[in-house]
Image (cartoon, rainbow, N blue to C red):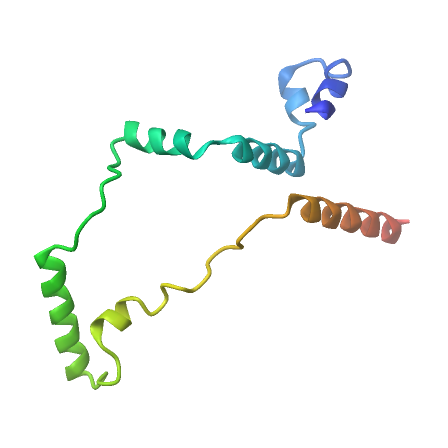
Length: 121
């Protein structure tokens, strides 16, 4: 935000000021905003949007689907794996980092910028 305040006097329009915002600035602002979010705020937001917080129980249809899947797997010679294991095969695969270290991202960005500056000279 400080960079915006510094650039306010040197720009003539809001669109020109907006062009001074870098992707890194935006990532840092978003990260700071997300850190300030309270869990209750997110829960209330989802509630207002119509998402229920009630735990869903497996339906009879899901059980039938699982039985059908097991039958198909048996027919296809997947005898060493049951349907439930197959359904949950990637349940524990990590799809994103546990944490986002903004300081490390900023430092990496700065180092990369410095490296490009030296090569260009």
